[in-house]
Image (cartoon, rainbow, N blue to C red; front, side, top):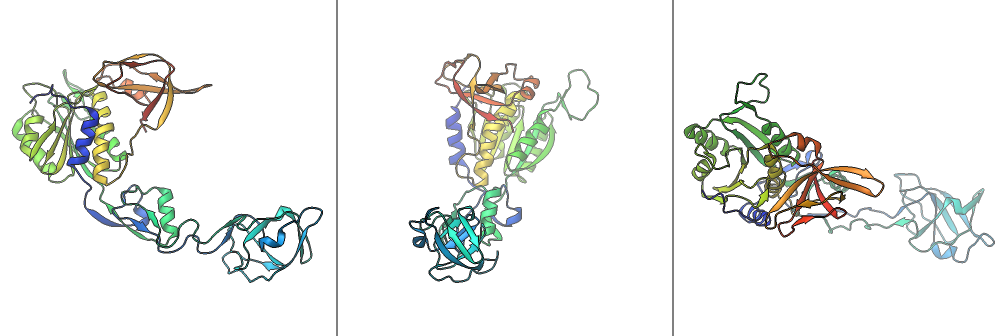
Length: 408
């Protein structure tokens, strides 16, 4: 394996998008569809709203009959009653109006609503002290969506607003892409389960597994943990083949560095064709990362150091899950802007991921770099996100506006 043949991070993301595609479609009830991505475009089966509605409490009128009205010369209308919520509106004739509440249906003949505070009532007589234009204080039939309009595009992530929209259209089931099943193995004879109370000399608790499982779950997948693989090739391969058969993405934590007892790359080559696609990424930390396509399924080999493993999975593991989930567009683009509080040096030609802490100041959000070795977990716990320094940059200066990928 030629681990020094590194690939640019942007190229790795392109490889993910070209090598892998969305999973099989399934039908799911709308109330359980949150976090899934639509596998088909949805069109509105009806108008939303299905009738002209008032946006204020007031009186439905024919707008032209208010023209020229003022406090000195009010327009006068005969109030024929009230539009009850959830009930059809009565008809009005010229010179008439009716009371309508916010969200209520307008009479078919009216085309505007004058706010109640711009009126004065005396019995059934309503004086209007302000003119209104046609359409004022009105949401028109089909203004939100017209029947046949595209409600949501294929690949759209279903969040609370989308679910609410579909519910308003009477849609009870949706076709979505299946959530990816992600299998995890930790590797190395030095590792023991994180819940082991006492350690023998040379042993290390497996901190990566629970952290990676959380990231995978947070990204919208269904994670499974296969345990710790010993440095014995036959067992390594046997368990990997069995897990790959059950999942859509297989992830190895550790075992991607150069060494005589490294079975990850050898195992990956046995799992399916075409095999290894990426044998290292030009980033720091996380350079010795492996990516493979094994008979159509992605396999990701993470560095063993905790900071490197979590950083890599946050970017590239999430990108794979996003691709398998069918989401079009990026869920994981940096979204938080902050001002850098100090200079950061970086080597040109390599993308650097810098851990940062975010603090509020009078000037706004400030990013404070958190430095430390890739094996030190404390620095991750102190950080609120990752700052990416592109390969073409030779560092960043204090005072620059930077974008942060948050640790959610």
